[in-house]
Structures are given as C-alpha cells and as structure tokens.
Length: 133
Image (cartoon, rainbow, N blue to C red; front, side):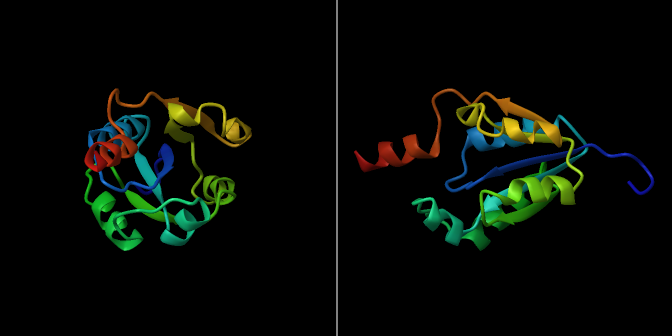
C-alpha cells in the first residue's frame, strides 16, 4: 500500500479463550479501515490488572495473528501506552467494546473513538463461570 493513504484501526484486549465475540469485534473493527492493529495485554500487564489468562502472551499473540482480519499484533504493557500507539501508528479509529463506553473519550483529540456493542450472551467471564459450575 505504499504511497496510498490507509485507514488504520487500533483495538486492545486480552484475547484469552478466543470466542465468537472476539471474532465479531475484530471483523467489525477491520471493516472500519484498511489496517487493523491489535494490542494484546502481556502477562505482566494482566498481573497488574489482577487478571489471569489461561494462555501465555506468546500463545495469545500467535492465535490472534492467525485471524484474517488482523494485520499486526503489538504487546500492551501499560494503560498509558494507548496514546503513544495512536501517535506511533497514525491511528484513525480507536475501537473498544461497549463495556468500555466513555473510558477512552479523552483520545478523541487524536483519533475517532468508537465503542462497538458486544456479542450478546458470550464473554470469557461467562465461559469460565459456565465451566466452574
């Protein structure tokens, strides 16, 4: 795409226990532009967030890289890096699930922030809860 203006979309997540909700949001994010970058929380960052993943960061990265809608995967190590990544990759659209509604509005000065509705009835938390019963 050299010499062409491309529209870049950026989203973030843990992407553990991949499910149809993840695929739906990645497909919808990709439909907003030409190039989709996905930031995946590192194991260390998950620990800071008091979150534990079943799969390690390298495995989650390989899984997400295999999804056809995804053009690039980057590690997410801090909350603050979102603005740095927006600037570094000349992001046009910052996309998150609607459960984050309003949390990233401060980034609207740098790109358009879009909150996409989640897939009804599915989440990693629900899957974990269903298996623990």
